[in-house]
Length: 371
Image 1 (cartoon, rainbow, N blue to C red):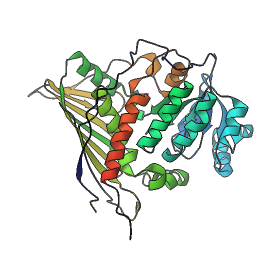
Image 2: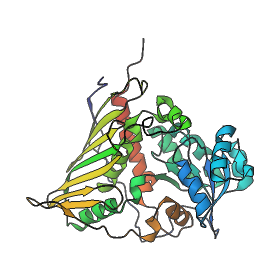
Image 3: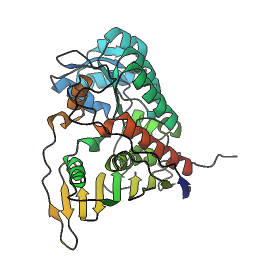
Image 4: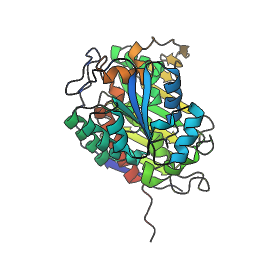
């Protein structure tokens, strides 16, 4: 069932400025003055990625979970038993948790639709935020989160797994240095066999497959990767045109949302093809860049291949990442305390553009209202 294929023109804006990574403190941000482990609160437990934080909280000396807010006490109890969390960490109410624990920062693990509510509670209290991708449910929500960030001097960062891939970082360096430039075509393949097929929990599935909580299915869940990566590679430039198509290949499994989508972004000097799916035969997080001097293939983590015209592929070992980009929790602690600059891939500026792209794509593939 093909939902739609529509072309929509967007106004061309000046590229969004990207922060100088050599500058540590971020202007306008009230960095934490605390030392020792990052005192972090967990907002929501319904996002499956929260288990990574709970595990890290028990293994790392530079993180300390000071509170967990989740309306579903049974869900908290189950995860608390699994990760040996103190029952005193539990709060049903977000405001009460923030007021009682006064964290430096919060990891937001709610549905995407609840990101705005989390920001409206955290920002006025001076609590920096790391939100699981994408930044927001809609452009309006994203703009509200950005407004709160600016008004209260707090960070509102977005976490993507691909931000920690050395392969992706090396590809950008090759482009920026001119060794592989200019970019003419970008292809992004992100997704997996499907959230139900890979065993996501019932709490995760309940909102991930709900268009009112996630905004869509695969088009949002995995389209966000290509949206932010293309924006980053184009140095904050907005696309001139967006074409989006989505379908439901497995309607008996995902009756309410798409499970396979393609978004085409047209820039003045390049084209991006974003392939987002819950119907791959395997976990897929790959990026291919085609430039006038050759191509770059980025797989997961350190997997990197280059190819010059009319030559075979060559394996490349990426340059080690800077220490502050080792992983999301190291980065979050350092950026909250002004020890490193905001990385563009997590920035509000680039992620607002990514949300704009998703908004237009969702508009094009919107399901007709039943009459």
